[in-house]
Image (cartoon, rainbow, N blue to C red; front, side):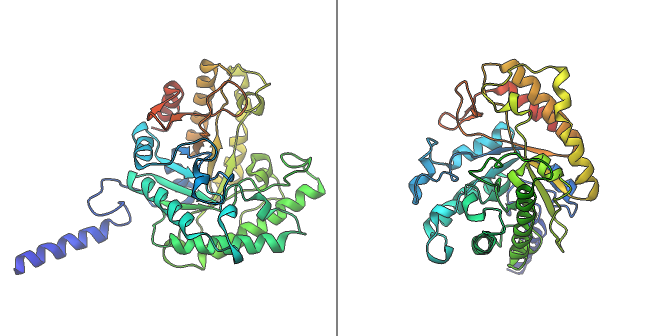
Length: 373
């Protein structure tokens, strides 16, 4: 009996020692939860977005998950993402259509998000969750700051409490593309534009509130890695001299960038469809991100990227190779935006067939994975 007790004590100690590097006792997934944000961000490598799913806002109940044409998320689907070679997943989540009085998140919705996070967790993936199509709730102007700050504080205090016991493999991202929605300056403005500079400043304040809210919560929230964007999550706005990162005693911050770059190739359905050596200079924004953020101790993650289908597979392969090769060289992890759409035209970024568990464009995926591996 004493020998048996001793054996279980030893096993228990081994499990406790492995908790920070494994998903749980008996799992085979090992993670390097480093104190260095640059190294941590680089370790995410090649990620995938569960797009048009938990971020859909066509309903305010559980049916919203499939309201934009994507199937219900299953454990088998997320396991396949891991098997396909992805090492991380970004789970976009919209909360504003699932809140009641006082911005209390509907319990059924929180449970469902938790369930999908667990699918990814058990599959051995790094996981990012965010506040996605909630832009009206954190509209970045001085006039609406009081309303926006209340929303950020209420939502993230609940999310932080729910996931407090998940270690640093789970990453929180404050906002998705906060911007001057519905105006001519929604996606682009001149560097010294008064309204644009105001929006960047308000976003900085909201990012700081987000960091403070999460850090004041319990469990792993004290040391969890946090991602924050500038206006529209664009590289030019992050690189603006007006934008700076929040203060964080934990020192674990990552800047969130979205880069469908160059726009006329990657997103604009009426743009050009060929990619050659001469266009690689369009990717120089990554060098600037390296200079401003990585060289100053901040991680960089391109949380959304992709090239829309223009019936130009060979060109998309060359673009994806050049894009991820440069990013991987600099230690920038990239997450393919997958909205499930594969038709020829604008914003069709489907990569994984979630119904049949297969890859629509294995040649594109292969070059990207090769660059990170």
